[in-house]
Image (cartoon, rainbow, N blue to C red; front, top):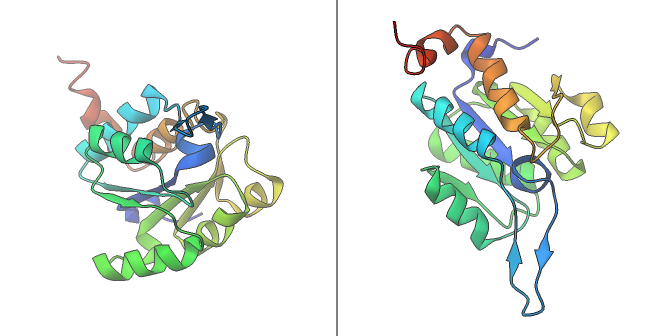
Length: 171
């Protein structure tokens, strides 16, 4: 098991991880996606712990940019056909080694990235091959609190959770 205390950044696939993978395409061609508020608050907790987050998507979507802006996610990589290449380039640009990264994915395009980073996670409804190679498989499916589950898992297992809870459980 990797040393979770070394994790400084959480990289999240979008479709199937931050969403349930459903794309709603209207007659005019506009698209919409649904994001889970538990995941959003989890990302806020992650940021309050002084950690970084990035969205990495194989598609480009205005909804992803809007959600990233709402959550003040600094790094958004979209239209990444080869996710591992995009991830390697991104990490080199910001000077972060892969051992300090957790990646959450659900489908085969995520598999190389999951295997590359320090802590690879598959959501509950990920394909079998992704689950097989992940360090952790969530109980919750993508789009239904899986990201929050990963965040709590890392924060609780690195001693950061109690400090964050003081905001909600004052003495």
